[in-house]
Image (cartoon, rainbow, N blue to C red):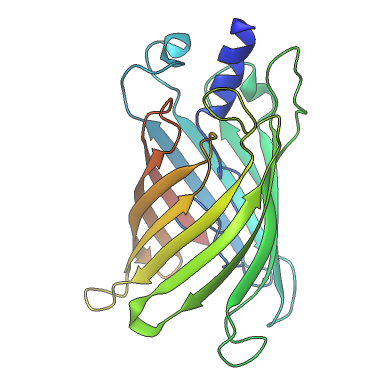
Length: 253
């Protein structure tokens, strides 16, 4: 049982939204890629050093994670949009890296598309891995998170989003190993146009003390019309996990 707990902990400690639909810093957003608009994401999540329940199994530090993703819009409509994506993820830990591919999809409507003043609405799923959870081996990659979100922009005050998610009750556990597979989603984001139209900030929250629950914040700088870089930090609700610093490069084609 101890071996299983350690392996499962290594699977979970990096959290997710790594199989990334269009996101804020950590949680999904109501944004959806336009038709045949390709999005490449290159994300790195670096764990703070220090003792943790899983550090001994990884040479004194929780493993860093590198995620390479490709997302594309697939509906030629204005009022209803859809994106699908695939990600390749490396933890640097066996056996997790033997199943490196994860899938995501999202469908949504932009603000004002249903009626004047209507919020953006999105439903989707992510981190659908290819390895079904095996209780004997103590690991899997089928987090299978599904969610719904609504968002509304209030002029220069920025955009506010709220939603709810549910994932695998075998994979999403609290620090005591109990089922903890649901929670709220909330975020705020805004372009700081009074400083520069290239500067964007966001803060988001994912409920639960599982491996996904976190308060995250960061900023983005747009280096070109189609290239931006996010710098952020994830503070996990589960005290077993050290904070994660993230750098995310986003390229649209």
